[in-house]
Length: 299
Image (tube, rainbow, N blue to C red; front, top):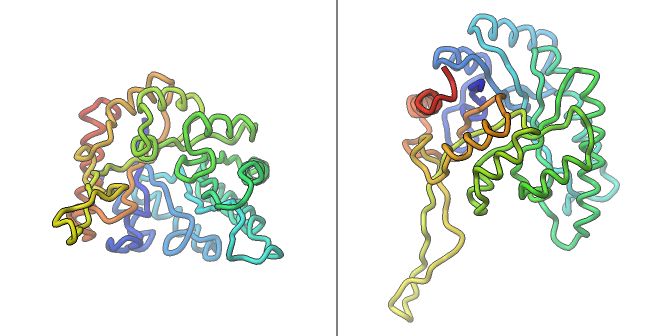
C-alpha cells in the first residue's frame, strides 16, 4: 500500500495549527511520507486560487520534498439544499467544482478526486435523492475522464452509506473511472463487520482514508431522580492511530484479501487527543506510519 498524508490535518478547521500548502508538502516529506492528499479548498488548493503560477509552485514543492500528490479531496453534498432556492443551480456548481479540480489534478499529477454523496434530506423522496446522486456522479466522472482522473466515492454521507448500498450505488453509476474511497470509520460506528465489509469493497476501492477514535459514553444528571440518564449516541473523539476502538487490523486484512493495494491516507479531521499543536499533529502522523509498518502494510 502507499501511505499518504492528508493536508486537511494541518488546515486548522478543528482547532489544529494551520500551515500553508507548500509548507505542508515539505513537512509531509520530512515526516516520511512519499504521497499527499490535498484538500481542494482554502486554505490549501481551491480552484479559485489555482493560477498557473500557484500550480508551478506546488509542483516545485513536490519535487523538492520528493513527494507526489495522488489525491485531491472535493467537498460535495449532492442532495437538494433546503435553504437554497430551487432556481439556484447548486448541483451544477459542484459539478463545475469537481471538473475544475480534475484540471488541477492533471496539472499536479494527481489521479484521484475524492467526493461525498449526500446527506439525506428529511421530507424528500429518497429515490429522487438517490437518482440525483447517480446522475451527478456520472457527469462528474465523465468530465473527469479526459483529464485521466478517477472519482472516488467516500463512504461518509447518508446516501449509499452501508457497504451493500454503496456497492449498489457504484454499480448504478456504472462508470469505469468511478471507484470507492472506502474507510473503516463509518462501518465501525454503525456496527458492520469490518473484515467482511472491507473485503467486499476492496475490488472497487482505490483509496482508504484512516483515523482512529474512542467512544465516550454520555450521561445527563436527573436531579428529580438523584441519578443519571444514559444519553445516546456516544461522543466520538479522535486519538492517535491504534489507540481507538476501530479494528484496523481486521479492516486492512479484509482490504488485502479483497485485492486492494492502493493509497492509504492518514487524516486528522476532528479535535485529536493531545491538542492541535504542530508537535502533536506530527507525532500522530508518525504514529500512523509506525502502525502500518508494524502490521506489514508498508516497508
